[in-house]
Length: 89
Image (cartoon, rainbow, N blue to C red; front, side, top):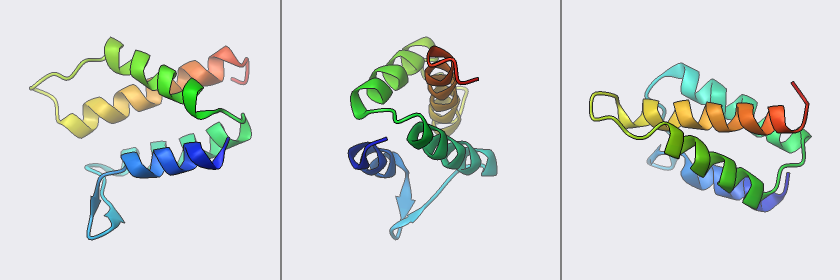
């Protein structure tokens, strides 16, 4: 995982007064586990961007669902896809 990907992931996190904010605890855990996993697999920015974009397309925003839930659900799906594509599961 490159420093650029770490920076890109950090930029995605919602913040209040500079501190990360998550709607639910599972979202913070998913992000933390994901960052560690992506780093261990040496995933690059382009690969992660494409995986996340595809996951968001498969799980589009639904007004009945909180935006953060939709985003992190797609985030976890993207992570699962990257891990599976590398036979790291």
